[in-house]
Amino acid sequence: MKIVVTTPTGNVGSRVVPLLLQAGVRPTLLVRDPDRLPGPLRERVDAVRCDQGDGDAVVRATEGADALFWVDPPTEDGDPVEGYARMGANGARAVRENGIARTVFLSSGGAELRSGAGEIDGLGRTEEMLEATGAHVLHLRCGYFFTNLLFELEALRTEGVLRTTLPLDHPMPWVDPRDIGDVAAARLLSASWTGQHAQAVQGPADLTWSEVAAVLTEALGRPVRAVRVGDDDVRARLRAAGLGERRIEGVVGMSAFMRDGYRPKDTRTLLTTTPTTLASWAYAQLRPLL
Image (tube, rainbow, N blue to C red; front, side):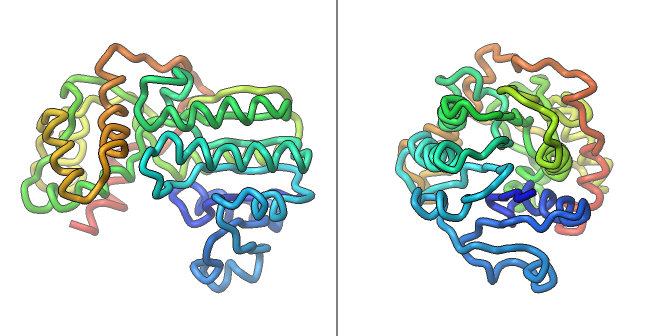
């Protein structure tokens, strides 16, 4: 079985790769810089230097693949929706031209809306392009990554503040990316599923931002409070960081659609619930950094 993994050093891909190795598979990894892979890992995989923005290179690298784990990597495109869609088009082309039987795509809750969800709209367009290939496709529509809290390290360290544009009592699924990797690896290793499906990956519970602050207070051993800020505050922070207007609106749009009454199409079930709690992740991963 030839399984190809994109973004193998990312939060999810870095979990998928060792699971495939432990299952006895030698995966093919598409990576811009193979030297970024740990030395012991490079000996056990087939690492291909590949920019996912180069459609010809993606097709060559995935030739003969039985299964593909596709992630739309961030791009420098001024419009993040167009950037994700451009990457998705290359993935779909590889599936179509190489006859890849099964693809597991790292998507997001909100992608099913197809429009109105900020930069997530680019993932929705990728879903459509992969489905148009006629191949077997599974979209993993994931909740909010625990690892997004790493972007708030400075505010947590100096102010004990967690900022959000969402109402503090707004519940949403929070998930450990490693658990997403578990689901992805299991699906990549299975040849028994067919058709085109979506499966949510929603962590163990929906949490409000107030509840997240309480969990972090306990796990980190320091007070943390959630504070609601306006969209314009976020815009100002992103402009100061050098982002262009379309990228800024792509970020703001990801919160705006959730405030407008969005509820995930995929309801929580045994299949969508994963085990790692925010408390255990924060104690093990976030606390040592503060």
